[in-house]
Amino acid sequence: MFSELFPPKSTWNVEDVPDLTGQTILVTGGSSGIGKEMSRVLVAKNARVYIASRSEHKSLEAIEEIKASTGKTEVFFLKLDLGDLRAVREAAEEFMRKESELHVLVNNGGVMSPPVKELTVQGYDLQFGTNVLGHFFFTSLLLPILRRTATNPHNEAHRVRIVVLSSSAHMFASEGILWETLQKGDVATKARENKGHRWLYGQSKLGNILIAKELARRFGDQSIVTTSVHPGSIVSDMQRHLNPIAVWIMRKLLGYPLSMGIITPLFAATAPETLGMNGEYITCWARRSIPRGKGCDQALSARLWDWCEEQVKGF
Image (cartoon, rainbow, N blue to C red; front, side):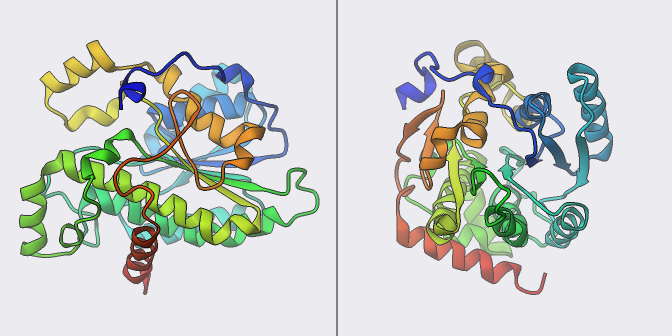
């Protein structure tokens, strides 16, 4: 925990991102924060980048800013609302109509500590429904294009990557998934209220790690490399729902700028060495690590995968 709050100096930096000519990369939540700054670097390194976000206005502003700062034009908007499973399907299908390959999927979008009673369109806890279930469904729908890209003989590395943004906050849910919080109705609401938004955020970040590990287990032999990452304690708009005093303390004592927060996800998404890290958890700054608590529980990963599959049936 200490080394994640106060990590050693990085030995890998943004300048080490290789040339990405020929690669198509999709970044969820790319209209602001880590996603936006990642997209800027990826575009600068000659990738074809899609910013997938709910807000078209913010995304188009980000795209114009990226074009102006990089002098490159290969950056596009994809409408994606992770809190609505029907909209998730629409986004995946729209992307596959436009593109024939996807080399890197960065599951970065999400919410942090909104009011406990806030729900997705389908009635799930907003944090878990967006951060985990929405991304699970989006990734599942994109698996055909990911597999096709991985088997394309013209794909030099013959591998594609899925990068899942998690957090050291997964340790808040050290006891694992509390299944009643994932259901619908009054009992689930009461269970969520008893645990609080901080714990629920931790549970969603644990869910990210578990799904990433299951993706790695199921598809690693198909040249799809999946990693989960903790980007560091980064100052961003993600903290807008937190107590202002807590935000002030974090920013003064623990917070790092976005320029640092993009190091680890960029490492996972682009570095040649991370092609050999399928299923691993990478912490700040660009270091191999091991998740805490239930983060390495294979049975729990499989159970969560099955639960997610059941929820998205019919969508």
